[in-house]
Length: 96
Image (cartoon, rainbow, N blue to C red; front, side, top):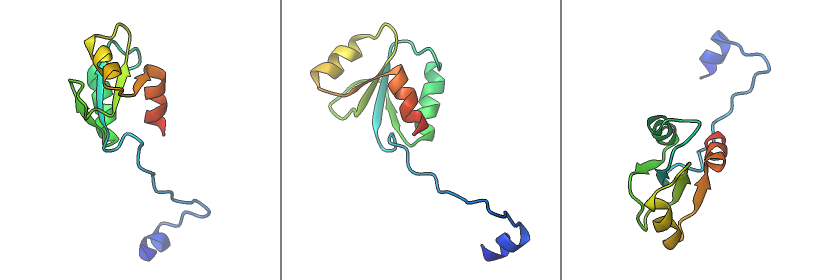
């Protein structure tokens, strides 16, 4: 590493390690239509942050992301007391 610093000086630039996403290791289900992402894009965003993406809500689900016109998954998540994230809350978590 020291050799790299000599070969490629960065002046006062500081390198930061990225902290783990709050979604890492969490099981997430999406219901309804999202405005910012297609379902496939949302899945890719979750997977890139270490989340586990599932299609059905179970007691092992950590979060349900609620889009427009959610289906029966929302009722099941509420019954199981699973935290429901709005699309805005979901986007905020992606940025953390």
